[in-house]
Image (cartoon, rainbow, N blue to C red; front, side, top):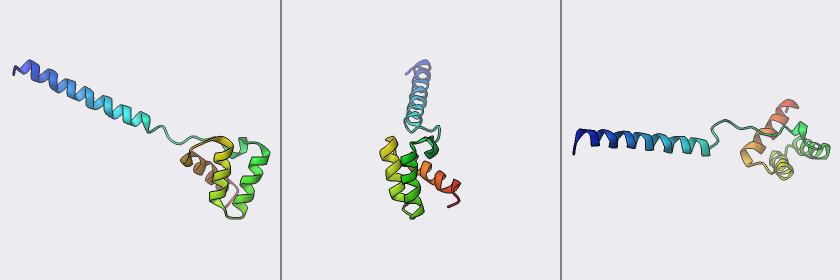
Length: 89
């Protein structure tokens, strides 16, 4: 095999590895977790979430947030825990 062909194969392999890594990172959403704050939801939803948090029902509060926004578990958990932290809990 000629040295030029070997070099082309190495470059092609490097480009393929780079493409796979960038695709995986993009599909994982490596930009961080962003969410709609509970403060921006309808007042009824805010009250429901706050009531669940005051009873110590974190899972129920997350479920209410998810039902209201359609967000995933990680974003919902982050939003509700931020609300709890802001409230001093």
